Image (cartoon, rainbow, N blue to C red; front, side, top):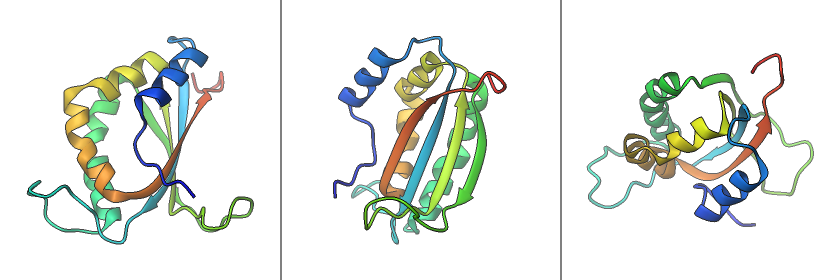
Length: 139
């Protein structure tokens, strides 16, 4: 099983090619935390669990989300895999609404956002990020 955490340039190009920039999008995050966060050597971050490292990321990303008009809609512990490959179990599900694909892409390109992704990368053993069209009622 391939473990993935961060989107690649190819992932983002595929997204841009398939969704008009002004389309409101809702991102579904499936998250599996490491038992112990793995920060890069010399990063200076205190040791912690993966869940705690993701919380550090969450605290720092919230002002950016607010600034761009994005909003977390749902976060909850995942309790069981009903359908899916063996070993593809998740710890948490997070759903975030963005006003547009353009807003999401601008966020991930921001230097202040890039700086805090060290916590997200250290926190996660595996992840999935699925872009959906935001329902009209939420747009």
